[in-house]
Image (cartoon, rainbow, N blue to C red; front, side, top):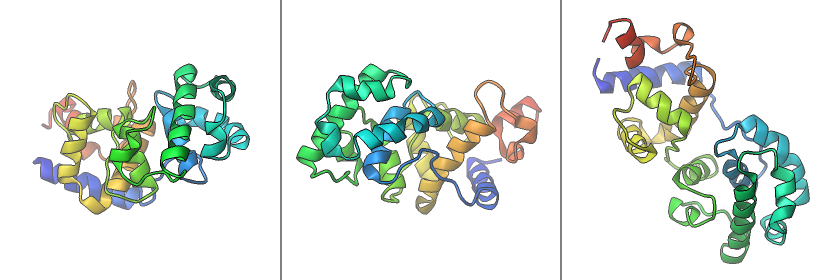
Length: 215
């Protein structure tokens, strides 16, 4: 099976079996999603969704959060991983957003990565989810799943994975493909105990084929 064929089969399977794939983070506007994605780094979406309602009630806008002390934000997110750093990021991000961008979340990666706590992955999530731009955010799930099933090959870091994925996935499908891979990695192709026998794409998976001597 060629890489092009593998991509084609896997994309067609997801289109048929997962026509709707969206972020599991709860948000009502771009600012809230930006906050939630920053908080989600090395943390589950479920945990983030548990703390954001109270956080957003206390600090509903970038202006409000920009005026907060770091320790005040910390109190709302202390059950999140790395709360000290993330509290600093949120306050710093809010200050920059309100002062330099008129509280409007940028629609491009170049500006987004200027914010504290925002790396390329987070920026790609924002431009993809909020602005429906053809961006591929690579988190731990996407990085792992892409290598396992054979969509990426020997990628040393998320950026290399991103470059390989956008080479073969049609531009118009990149926003949803990001969620296909995340959700597949979260619920089927899990890190420790992947459910290979129940996986709908095991016939196209490089790891499955290798382990069953079909490669």
